[in-house]
Length: 62
Image (cartoon, rainbow, N blue to C red; front, side):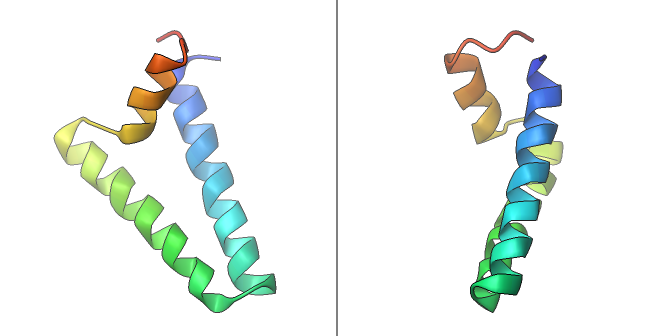
């Protein structure tokens, strides 16, 4: 799987996990979804995403 496809997959999975946790465990887990969303917005403007750096260090091909 390519880098950007994996990034979208990870972001989507984290959002779904966060929403499930906020529904079944505690409502404050919704803040994780907010942080992920803010990070996606930030990365659109700065062209830098921490997860991309991590994936590149793990050897995921672009």
